[in-house]
Every structure is written in C-alpha cells, then in structure tokens.
Amino acid sequence: MPSNSIRFKLWRKRLWTLLITFCIWNSSFSQDNSGYSILVAGHAYGAHAGANIGLHPPFLNKLHERTDTTVAALFLTGDIVNVSNPASWAQVASELNDLGLTSYYVMGNHDNNSAGLSVFNKKHGGLYYSFSIKNELYIVLNSTESDRSISTTQLKFLNDALQKAASTNKRVFIFFHEVIWNSQEKYKLVRSNSRSRYAEIKTVSNFWQKVYPMLTAYPSKNFYLFAGDVGGNPDAVAAFCDRWPNVTLLASGMGEVADENYMEVNILPDTVLFKLIPLNDGVEMKPIDWYNVPEAPLYISGPEFVTPPQANVMYQLSPVFNATSYKWNLSNGITGSSDTTGIELVFDNTFKSGLITARAVNDGFGESEPVTLEVKSAVYNTVAENTIDSGLIIHQNQQSIQIDYHSDNRSKAFFNIFNSSGMLLYHNEFYLGKGLNTKIVDNHLIGKGLILFELLVENKRLNQKAILY
Image 1 (cartoon, helix red, strand yellow):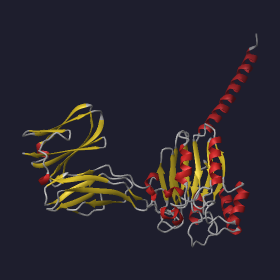
Image 2 (cartoon, helix red, strand yellow):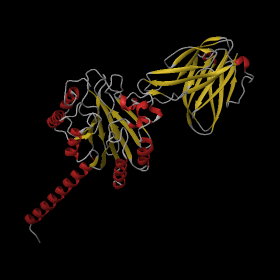
Image 3 (cartoon, helix red, strand yellow):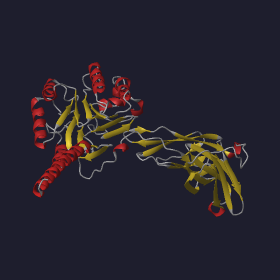
C-alpha cells in the first residue's frame, strides 16, 4: 500500500488538477456569458460651422470621461468629417488613437470622396464589410453608393452574409448613414437631417422594398439597425427608435441641437439595452422608446349623449407617454380648443350627431393614428332609457346603483360614470371575471339626472345612459 506521504501527494495533485479544470471552465463560462457594450455616434464632426477638423469636441470630451472597460467598439455612423481631406482624416485617427477604442467607420455623404474612399479601403478593406463580436454578426453598409439607398451589389452582400450566418447568430447589428427607413409614410413628419426626411428620401430609398423583407425572412433572428443622419440641423431630432416584429430601428446624432448625444448599447446574454448619453451639461435624455411617432390614445372618455344647446361638457383623452401635445378635431356643431388631454366642449342648438377625434403629437416625430368618439344629441335619440343593447344592465334603488355585465373571459376593465356635462363622477379599475359581474355604487357619489355609464374592456367601449331619481 502507498505510504501516507505518497497518498497525500496523490490527493494534492488530483485536487490541484480539479481546481485548474474548474478555473478554466469557469473562466470560459464567464467569457461566453458576460455582456459587452458598443458605442454608436452619428454626424460625429458636429456643427456645419464648427472650427474643428476632426471629431466634435463635446463628443471627444465625453468619451475621455468614460471609465467603462467593457466597450468592445465605437461605430461612427457617417459624416465623420466635415471636409473629407487627408488632414481631417489624420486628425480623427489621432483622436481615436488617444481614446484607445477599437473603431469602425460608416460612410456618410460628407465622407464620400476619393480621400474618404482611400481611408475606408485602408482601414476596413472596402466601403461595406462584416465581422463578428463574440457571437453577434455586425454588418456595415454604405447608403451613399446608391444615393440614400442600398445598392444592388450591397443587397447581394447582405443576403450572402445572412445566409452564411451561423444558426447561433441570433442577433445581427447593421449600420448605415442616412435614415433610409424614413421613406415609410408613417415617418413623414420625422425631422431627421434634411437629406433623410420623408420628402427627400421617399422616391429613392429601397429599404422597405428590398432590405426589410430580407431581414424578416429570418424570423428567429433579431436585427438592430443604426443610422446617423440626425442631430445635424438646428430643427432636427437627436435620436430615433421604433420596433417592428424582429427589426429595431435606431438613430443618434450630434452637432446643432441642445440634446445632441451618442448611444451606448449594452449587449447582454438575454437582452439588448440602449442608453443615450447627452453631450451637454444639464440635458437629460429620455428613454430610447420616447423618440418615435406616438401611439394612438386608447380612448376618449366623456358622454356620448348631450342635450344641445349645452356648454361646459368635459372630455378626457387617455395620455400617451411620449406625446408633447394633443390635436383635437371636432364635427360641425361642436366647438372647443385644447392641446392637452382634456377639452371642454360646447354643443350648439343645431347639433344632432358628430365625431370628436384626437391624436397624440410628438414634436419632431409626428402624429399618431386618431381615436374617435361618436356623440349624439339626446333630443334626437329614440333609444329608451335603461336599454340593455350595450350589454350593461342598470338597476337602481334609493341607496345604490347596480350595474351588471356578462363577460366571456377574465380581463381588465375601466369603469367610469359621468354627468350630463361630462364631469367624471366615479372611476374604478378592476378585473372582470368570466360570467356575470356586478358593480354597486352608492347613490350619494353620483347624484340625480341624466348619467352616462361607461365600461372599457378588451378594446371595446360600452355605454349606457340612465336618468337617476
């Protein structure tokens, strides 16, 4: 039998081997599952009238302040230099070298001449290219080769890159300069830099005809697209974000707006997060989803029956998180004015029926689809009180009002009661159960006279009016 000394040495050797194996495995596991970040900056030369020949000075200052060591790369999404000449490109190279960041160039219209082509060919081997970081595929395209579009040659390059991508490449990051998706009518009011606005780009961009279908052909992959032609005009937006089924559209820029910024993208094992970094002190950027055309409001609350002539009738619009104002449109016989979620209306003695329509507005991005409420004059309404056509059944006694509603499934509901002037008397949010549901409201909370009961459930609006005594 081995001596105790030999057994101890064998045991210690095995333990050491196991420890080394665990450390190697743990290190590999950590590397494969740890996150990293990239930085994305558009219109990086800054202001058209700037004195700098290299990168925008406030942008450089912010980068020098960073201490984050997880940054894998900096992407400059076009208009890297104001004047494309050897001196400007040398200045940019020197500034990036001082930062110690791995950088990738995207061709912009200011960069696109013989000097810029020479720089791109030397740095990246071409004007469009692809590579991988960890397990993600990165593709850089040139939207200036075919003016504010993706050329036929690049479409083939993109298609080949996607076909060759490994099945494990679940996320793909694509970069170009102009906001070529602005050819979609949805974005007709988005104030990007002038070359990328809807009126200028709608007849030249092939994004929705050629590029987008190529991406949606891979529904198991998530695509993140970055443009840089924002922030460079005094009236321009400084960022953009919209989400389609498996395609996220993003833009960030600087130069001539107070909220100029660059974007930090944190790429984690199970998600991708976006943060806008302001270049100017005292500026606080909003969450990335704010920088988009607003969604339509969910509903307009208020009486559907009025008794003209009637004034001071209140209507309330459900708020939209990124709206800077609201636009109301009224049918003939209805007057009132507001740019907020609430409006006080007057119905004249000619009013019989009409529509109240409202849209959410985000200045610089556009208007939402409308939400509409039909209103009728009770004078011309022949429907009897307490009818059950709406699905609401109303019972009343001296102490309370009972409202019954039959639901086919469990769902969240909003219950409101208004008086004849549109004043909200009662509000409650609750979940309907499957089957018959009952709400009981004390009479003293409501009062007497013509009352409107409203139930919002599953994108449906159920209304019932009754005269309470």
